[in-house]
Length: 520
Image: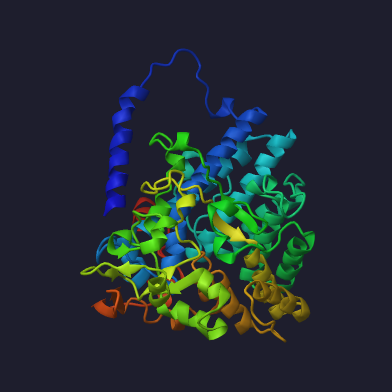
């Protein structure tokens, strides 16, 4: 388990540095009450918030995607990461590391936001924008807390020492708070809009339209379809974002960071001087884990463009491939740009090495986020440092959210227009009419493996059927056949999985918290 070993080494390194940081203080070194006074200090605080956001992305991504039905955990062998496997197979409990770390990471982000909101006076344009962005991120964190964990504590300010053991709030309170933060961020007039769809510089930070998109998504998840449609229409009608017009299989790569379709991305840099271990924020172990299991395959001619040394912790399922084929056919443009079969890969020269097998693999390979050498800051070396931005939200999701809102409570003509824009880019025949089922199918394919499906399945009421047998059997792919080598006695989505558990550690530290139903 290479990544766990690395984490342990980093902890040892950090502990070893403590003695060098124990420097005697001379005079008043300042504190929280002395900081946050200038524009520069406000921006430093905001940079810290963005760094915290960066740091929780891997847990955010894996929790959301492994709970859904589009990928297997994979890895080098069975048991390479048991917490990921248990998450993917619905055998996890209240001590699962990913569930715990995501929960704690969201509250760390909320704390950083509360520092800014509580201590920065919005008395200059720079400081006012900083406060508006902090409100956006507080809402962003609370959105995932309420949709994944339910009625967790509402932390709307910096807490006094005696306030840390807060009890549960209600989901109604949390949704109202999310709406308030996003509305205030939009109405503050401090968030800029891009000059046009190709203004990549302004789009590197939160814009007014990004906040509106998140507010529209918030309305939709509460079944406020009219409000959702109206808000998302504003984003679309602004014309500040467009669907990417280049080759679809290059959309999610470094060459197209901050493209016209990018709504929200965590920024990475192509800077070889920032590759040392002292620059932890630029360490992108995420892509190292995500890429194909390269020690078990011969990539043939693909080795000239695909990066080597990756660990294979994310493999598409046959059910996802079959869903593509059902809509697009085996040679569908978007299918071949997103997921490829073993036969297609073999035609390009890739083979599983003799005597090897790929764990948690049915013979399908992620293509749209394949790790290219050009994505690596130092091509040809193990990809610890990749300059592909972390994708959080793109314009295609906005169009599909708006289509759903209009199908359920708006203008079906607009819904049809929005979904057909997606289909046109995918080189599919336009639909003559649109239903909710059409939106569901389109969203699974367009945004596959992009951290949205699990929450959609839950809110649509589809999770218990779609995920009922997840984890029952786990495959391995030898290059010539798929073998189901492992099974679980218990598996699959149950009623309790509509909400994740409050992590056990949180429950032990806080006697005022009530655990979600079905968890102990």
